[in-house]
Length: 275
Image (cartoon, rainbow, N blue to C red; front, side, top):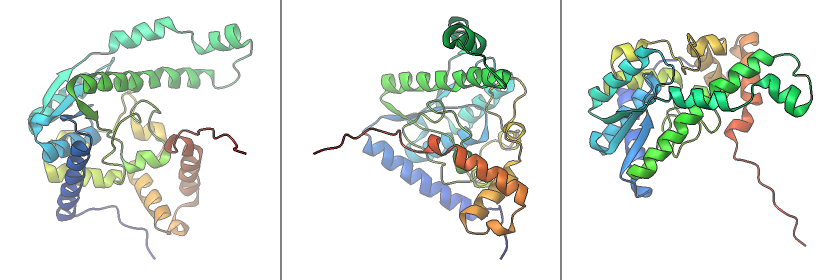
């Protein structure tokens, strides 16, 4: 047995694009909505979703929203290029001042522990502070998308892929807060293949993936593995070929999958015992 190859032929990628586009159109009709609403970040995943939504319902029924927040200017430039490539209706809403106002209005992690909880924060205070602040931005974007979706009679389309979903690499009630997820059965390598098949600009495809959580942040650096390593490992685990994997990488990925299970599960709800 061999580990499944991480490659998708263009013909297969086009067929997959058609299948997802048909699924998207069904979801739009099912919701009796007028349009798709999505955040366009300048990255490959949102570009692919934008292109698929345009194929599904026509570009005039897609609202692409650029939401910079102390972001790399190239992110906005790439996002605008994608919107132009697919002929989408688009708008830019700068959330920098909104995020800054929020940060100024809430206590920092040290204050929460010492002033509110009366405890010592312990180890990892800097990491917790950075993560708490970073997660504010995707949650503000979620609020913005739903505000516009309510106004424009739309449904919010998520842009996460299977690789990120399986390891929990998304913000709960941030980029994870959407109405539909068209890419969650596609590994990152499949997203790349679909991107080329539907005409996503090449510079968007080849950019280092980044959630834009802080200056200089890249997904692979934060995760500690490349997407190719993640795709190979996850697909091997999914198809029963885990015995062929590097044991250290396998253990790391397995740990990420298990510790983020709560992010993929429905919210636990209490049910009373009936007599």
